[in-house]
Length: 415
Ligand code: ASP
Picture (cartoon, rainbow, N blue to C red):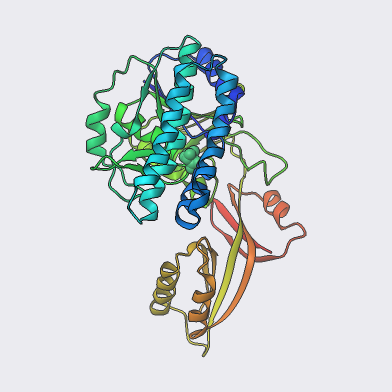
């Protein structure tokens, strides 16, 4: 069996959905399980519903209606007959969200979040599945919550592999299946989510349990590029990447493939293709066994809005294990993600991702024990497989605050 994944951007409008049909017709659709995300930016819109529920109840219905309007426009372009059963099905899903929010008693944000946000995927797959049928591609709509079982860590659920495997074993693998990314369910059958951008991971989980031949992620780019075209002018397509290299790239912040996605695939050596949904017959990129990276060219990754902190001891004493462990505990307590570390005898520099706005209270604590210099809004550039030209191109005209070189990787913190 093959597993395909179409992300939100690929089904953001009626043309996108029509293109899914085209892709399936071109590359074949037998023995295929297709994982689909919520359409366009629906997950963000559903997040707004949740925040209205907690902060401004009056806006709940209007924010749900906005999401409905968006889907209604897509539906009317896809299904000329407004008596088509799909309208009823989608309306029922919207009624379910409203019903849930009307009777819910739980004050827990993460729980409510998962019960509400998941409708983005339930709606998108309902529309795509019905449209495929219309176009002569019979398929089975699978509720992924009956397949992927998780614990109840809402918003970041952990997969119960044994339970999931048992359920996936019962799938009829000779058919075309359409299912949701991002979702699972807990022991009480409440919806759980696997973390934002979790649909790639869904594809990997199902591929693992199905012993699939391959996973293909269909994208609006030709494959994995050596740099993000939003940040770099010149980019090149990578034809082949090893699992290890892909994990490294993801670790440094390349957003193409979610790191969690690679682990299950690597364990069973299932190749992961990243291909263009505009040119489905092109090769794209394959992540799998074999060469680390081909062609072997520098890969650029940038993380913006980082914080560089330089700590030095107040009394010229060394910064060694005991104070380093205290410093790391502070980072952990303030939910700072450490991107880069550089230390000398009496100073310690660290580049942090201040995702949860914990910077100021943390700095206050650090200042009690160290001299602290802090640069906000710096960028961290990483070049894998660097050469001199690649490094120079980044240094060019910028003020480099820290540079760190390893064998394969150079990192620059730049203001
Ligand atoms: N719809 C979810 C999100 O936007 C999952 C995904 O698209 O991967 O995060």
